Image (cartoon, rainbow, N blue to C red; front, side, top):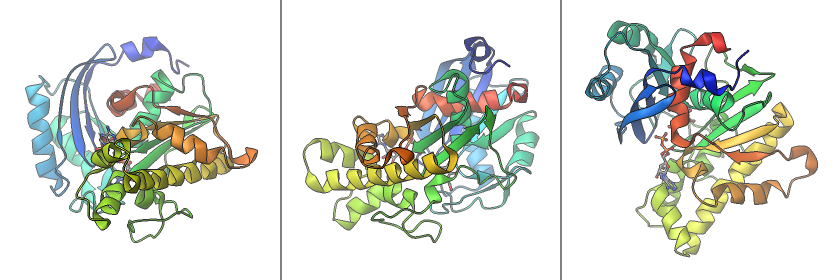
Amino acid sequence: MTYGEFAARKKLNGYAVDLGGTKTSVAHIQRGEIINQETFPTQGSLRLDAQLDLISSHLFSLGYSRKDNLGFAITGQIDRQGVWSAVNSETLPNINGAPLAETLKNRFGKVNCCNDAIAATLAEFYYGAAINVQDFVYLTVSTGVGGGVIVGNRLIESSRGLAGHFGFTSVNAKSYTAVANRQTTVEGSAGGKAIASAAAALGYDKNAKEVFMSAEAGENWANDIIETSAQAVADLCANIAVSLDPELIAIGGSIGLAPGYIERIETHLHRESAFFQCRLCSAQLTADGPLLGALAYTDAKYL
Ligand code: ADP
Ligand code: BMX
């Protein structure tokens, strides 16, 4: 086994795509390092072909050609047949049931794709925060709230592709929006879209990043929204502790990595009894995780 060895990271050569709910990144990776990258806003309402046209133009501009290794990390549910659906259809309203794997194969030849949080989980496990950790959970707090699970050194992947969609678990916290027709979900309390709609409900036209800036500037309404978000993620961590008992939970995504956010989660989590506590850390690979993981995922021999 070569889990987590730096040597394995050096074997990563090719191109990777990370299509998130807010931004898309396309990267050229050589010997495990991102040497060139383009990031642009995700146009969530595009259908599959239009989405791939946009991504292709950036791939080719970075020098990609069909012989190169290519990995895709994508927000949403990808089943074992490579069919793509949005669990939160507000994020991607027009892709449900799209034949992602088949379309990628026709366009690019050999290419692999997986959920964005699964890719980041794998990257943290191989090269980041979870080297030598056998039981591990990764959470992204970003546009939505997603995750991935390693139990006994094995990535948990279900045939429907839904395993790890922690954002849709339900918690006992104030929730601003129903997601996937479900009330009081973690994603509806903690994700970027929820934070922005909480601000809008109070009359502030701000995205999550701007709400964090308002909180930093001492505005109480913004602080309350972020506190609710962190409380929901802490509840989720306690639920994960008692259901999967990981040694470590790494928190990623732009909200998860925002200064002070993990400390807020820890403050709430420490109020729980010892059974429900779990060691937390920030995602070590930050936004590179999904890109490195997407490329690593193509090399199934590591699993
Ligand atoms: P994606 O969901 O596309 O993978 P991100 O991980 O960047 O992308 O998450 C996007 C969300 O994070 C948006 O709601 C955005 O407003 C918010 N965000 C971006 N930067 C920051 C920041 N520095 N602090 C707090 N929130 C941020
Ligand atoms: C949502 C879900 C997950 C995804 C997670 C983080 C959709 C479209 N996405 O829970 O598949 O992993 O968000 O994704 O249903 P991001 O868009 O926040 O990066």
